[in-house]
Length: 169
Image 1 (cartoon, rainbow, N blue to C red):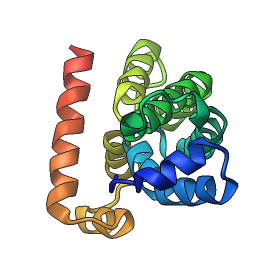
Image 2: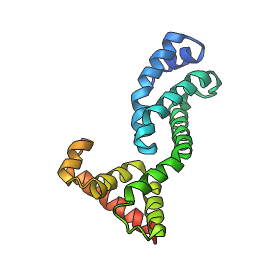
Image 3: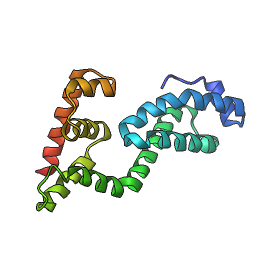
Image 4: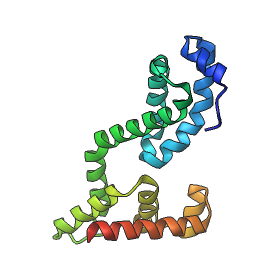
């Protein structure tokens, strides 16, 4: 996050609503980018919104203004973890249902293990595995959909499968 103006941050901490608004607007895009790596894709906006609310309410409690950036990122990560825990059960079931056609119907243990392995992957790795192996998209289609390069998609897919194999072993 680009360094905030210390006087602006100090004014926001002191109760200046306009300064607080400017600080939160400045922080939003950086917090969203950070949340994309720590939250499920559907939870990113919720995590950022809740984090901004927490930041606005608790800014007066911050003792050292130079720690604002790391403090804000910790709040986002904590919110992502909270949302992940809250949604973990239904997401696990959702992934399990997606795996039903791919796995043998009589092998419930394998389906459960695969669903758990996919649930354990970080969101950006889980996404490429689901797009490739369940939706059958090509590398080029995935790159276009995720707005990145084919090389990045290949690297993420390779890492995701390696992590899943490690989890299943």
